[in-house]
Length: 88
Image (cartoon, rainbow, N blue to C red; front, side, top):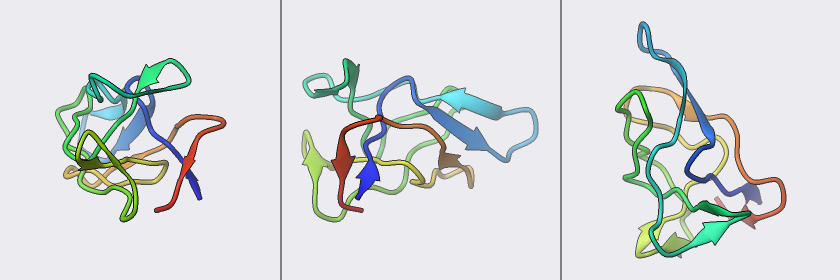
């Protein structure tokens, strides 16, 4: 099980000048620990798109993102919920 990622959690991007940025979009309907749940297809502040998600859990029809999910800039999610977990 992996911690669920949410809007506001951090992503580390290897692109020059991007660095560590927050996830800036998430579910309009589902929250975990007070924050919208991040899903495959959601964006980070540097413009990266989350390209991984759970193979067994969806949020609003999209795979639920979790700690360690990759983005299309080659980065990954580096922070997530403290209590809520999902199967990768």
